Length: 300
Ligand SMILES: NC(=O)c1ccc[n+]([C@@H]2O[C@H](COP(=O)([O-])OP(=O)(O)OC[C@H]3O[C@@H](n4cnc5c(N)ncnc54)[C@H](OP(=O)(O)O)[C@@H]3O)[C@@H](O)[C@H]2O)c1
Image (cartoon, rainbow, N blue to C red; front, side, top):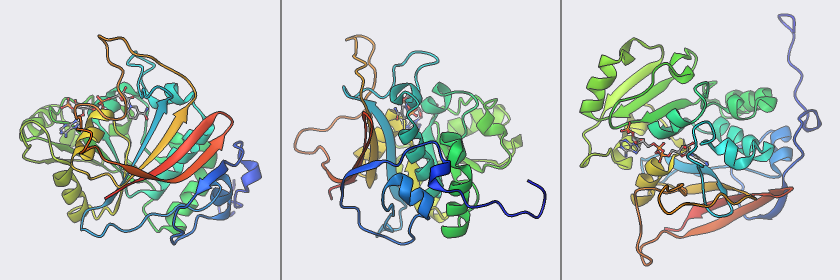
């Protein structure tokens, strides 16, 4: 388009995805509203309350098979897109959540298991809605063009050749241990564009969710975190009860598990006793063909 011309607003019918069908919705209607094309595709409103504490509000996003598997653990087929079958509804919601969040959080296992080209930004999830996501994020939510990408590693052994570390336009912060900081410095992380590294004293070998969230709040002014896992990082957050909501896509396939090689569910490395296991309340259910899109809130 020549300079000076204004991009026409995208209409829902110009996007390839059919609107999601609402089966059940009791999400509180919170300001600001989604712009019309996103509201029509999503089939209703999406809004997030402010956390009452100083910590950011945390929403998780996973796609799981019917039998609860989130990764095949097969090189080249480990990511969520294999589980969802690259489902447009799942990709659209992931893009919408990324567009809404101040920060997108992932663990190093996920960084290394998805495509080396992966960028944790709205457009990468669902490029078809790039313009509407951008307009929602920048004009309605008044947030920077891309969310802050937050990566957690204890060891500091990150593959810094991946596209996310080379993308100037995307701000990144890596949270690690003092040993991890040394490793990252040795690997040249400080010379990379838009990458900051913060070391936090671990509790035993792991960083606590609370310490990560406190620093995101105080130093980076983050109020809404999208937690994209994986299971180990998410397990730690759930153990500390620091996840407020879960957006879960249920893909209509079964992956199965061998006794020896464990394919993870949405939580790894943590288990709850029946009387301590967190309960969630259902906020909404959407459907498109054979996929279900569930939104849950932690019962506190
Ligand atoms: N289906 C879905 O929706 C979905 C979503 C996300 C991920 N996945 C899949 O899940 C698999 C990855 O699972 P995962 O459990 O290994 O993922 P992960 O939690 O992303 O990565 C685990 C690694 O992250 C670091 N880490 C996590 N929690 C930490 C903490 N509290 N403190 C310090 N470091 C921490 C550690 O890195 P270091 O070893 O470097 O110390 C750890 O080895 C991948 O196949 C991915 O594609 C699926």
